[in-house]
Amino acid sequence: MNRGGSGFTFYIARRILEMPVVLLFVIIVNFTIIHLAPGDPASVMIGDFAFTGSGGTRADAVAYLEEVKAKWGLTKPLPEQLWIYASGVARGDLGFSLAANRPVLDLILQRVPATLLLLFVAEFFAVLLGTLLGAYAASKHPSRLDAFVSGTSITLHSVPVFWSGLLLILVLAVRLKVLPTSGMTSTGIASQELPYALDVARHMVLPVLALVLFRAPVLQRVTRATMLEIIGEDYVRTARAKGLAERTVFGRHALRNALLPTVTLLGLSLGSALSGAVLIETVFAWPGIGRLLFDAIGLRDYPLLMGILVISSVGVVLASLLTDLLYGKLDPRVVYQ
Amino acid sequence: MTEVAAPAIPETRTRPRRPFWHEFVYTRASLFGLCIVGTAVVIALITPALPLPDPTALSTDTYAPPSPTHPFGTDNLGRDLFSSVLWGTRLSLLFGVVVASLSAVLGIILGTLPGYFGGIIDDAFSRFFELFLSIPALVLLIVVVTILGTNLFLIMVIVGLTVWPSTAKIMRAQVLTQKQRDYVMAARAAGARDFWIMSRHIVPNAVQPVIANSTLLIGSAIVLEASLSFLGLGDANVISWGRLLRSAQAYYYNAWWMGVFPGVAITMTVLGFTLLGDAINRILSPRERTLLGLRGR
Image (tube, rainbow over all chains, first blue to last red; front, side, top):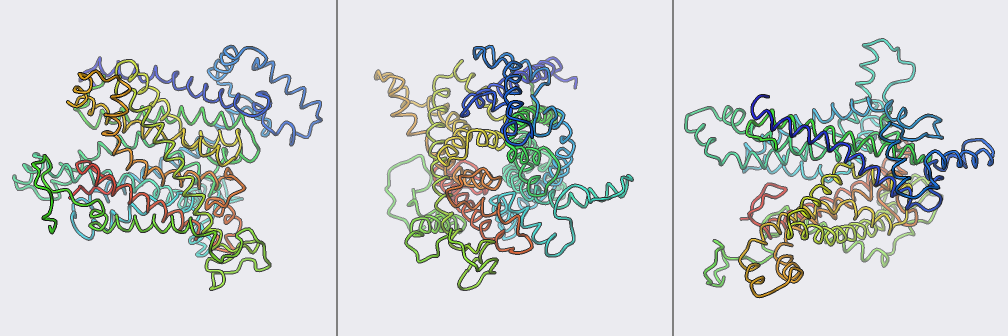
């Protein structure tokens, strides 16, 4: 991008410099939670598992508690503790999950691909469906068709995402038995490329469908509202006056501009998309970060919970940076400051 | 238009102001929303007086499909689901209203201050909003509730603390336009102090969109409560639609009705508040684009 080159570089540099600030903020939030929690911060950082499920003796647990206290400097003054914790996270040390007997970062990174796969596929279809239906509803405005599409959209928007997942399971998996209820792969599937991919795809249908039903309505509404606004603009009238086909006016002139708010919304609502994925992964036992989070709730695995909070926040910020860049590509009028 | 009795005061408005309820009757969607919310409120109020079976009473009549005696069927322990769903209305509405009110109070204060004072305060607040929004709300809620405990009051406070930025953003934008108005200048010229100007002049004039947003937030809060309960993070002492759905997961093959009716209740209630909020928005600020994309008529 050569236009406004220095402004662009500056903007990107600023956004990247913001990353550590976000990270520090999440760390402070985590740190506050640890210290607000009832009981000893050290036992919070270990999680209940040390005392209930590790199988070791009580003496082992107490010894481990001392070890954790020493490592994170929990006997030192608060600012120093915060510094030790923050520098630990900066080095990629998110703590150790006793329940899984592995470092937290390893556990999370192992689950990232499954969540990304689910989210990307679902967002792709949600954007496709949402913008097309939004544009369609706007093109039929005002009519019964428009009212129907928009009414359906606002109703779907009120459906909690986990319930649509549950209904899909009840209807398509339990009753009609056409798709698997949960998981990412069938047991005993050959790890050959094609059968494996097909098996994963089959398992993905329902969770993706549930997420699309959750996300598409939001995008549909924004696209429709923007389209209705754009149709009234001069350049659309000019295009019509030139005698261009309605299809060209809509597709080339209006829809292209209506995509901009969609991209903005996409960037702003990534946290919401992630929340949806957490719930959907829980319903469908999809082995991603959401399911990991759900399992961590059951085990009271606090270090893992806080690690997921850090990593998911970083993920959301990175993704919103990417949408910002995409926005600049789509809209040449954008000036980065 | 039949309302010819509109006062003939020369106004900037192009059309005479119609009664508040007119909008509700005018658009069917708004009326529908009003009906749903009204029904939910009535159910929440009269449930204790209804001759319903105790929603926690176990019976031998397990997995009974919907029938005249059990309109929504019974669960794995023979509890009447119709009664459970009706009782669940109380928690959902209470939760939604408390969270939305908390968010409105926080949002009005934390949106007015940066909007009014501008400068460094505004910059700092804006950065803080951004930071806050970069944390996925549900994940934060899950972590906090898991660690701090599943007490109903505590959960309401925590959810309220996570949803206020949307209110604050709206309030700030409103204040930015209001503080340029002549009446603020007049108040200042008359020697009014900042606090007086904000609380007596700006907030009352800027607060309208917050009312609509708070109505929408009631719906969002109800979904958040249901989500947390669904994940096992609800208060175990109250009946929650989310927890009813959570237990339905283990009985897909025995009792489909366990997974259907509580979800219908959540969807309808949230839809009601969405339509109502949208209608309020359209009435209070006719120029704004609303959720449904309708404009004030």
